[in-house]
Length: 281
Picture 1 (cartoon, rainbow, N blue to C red):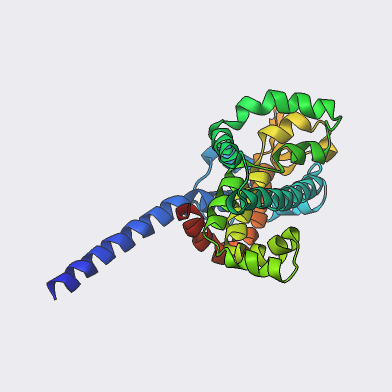
Picture 2: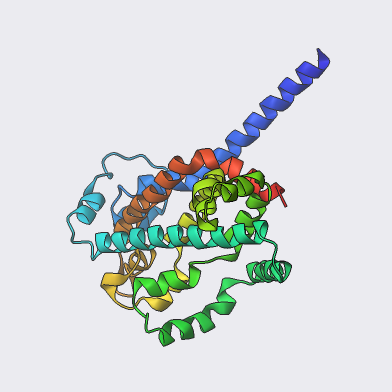
């Protein structure tokens, strides 16, 4: 009985702690959501606050965005969606194949390649921006979505993650597939990839969030307003001649939706995928 009582107190304290963390985490989003209904004069006067004043709140900011007068908002939104979908799918495809190959096939230099992947994973991306910039210029991909996507079609973190996950898969499937006459690509796509679904789900969320929120590299590559991604386009609303904070905040609220949908769709894979992929090795 004393142990049960002690556990109950501990559970209540943990619950209060998690509730406090949840409130602290969600507070900026709640403030942002309220501010998206207020005019810029109100935001300049009080900033982001929790004043729920229905007299000052309206749908004018969202109506302005949907009217098509807010610069090229939906063009930026579409560009971000296209780049995020393509970058995530291609990164998952190629990184999973590399990680799977490092985990399953025994060949000379396999460990060296894996060590190089770990080294690259520790290097900040800002350090390699200059050589990437020269590469994109050489390939004549400046101001194109492929210039944004191409350098990150294979990433070290997903390779490491898929390699760790594939290490824990039963190798009997490989032998069974080969006996049945399946090719190595067939074994990967038809047998092993479905078993790696939790890893794909977890990496889809992380890579999708990274591609959607990426600001620095698209800012370097993209030059035309009609090709800007959403983070860059929203940043252009802040100018020395006037800051459209009301439109910026309303646009930022709508920018949350794709990531929210992505997380809801893959959340059942997220915890299991990260847990297994982070432990096996």
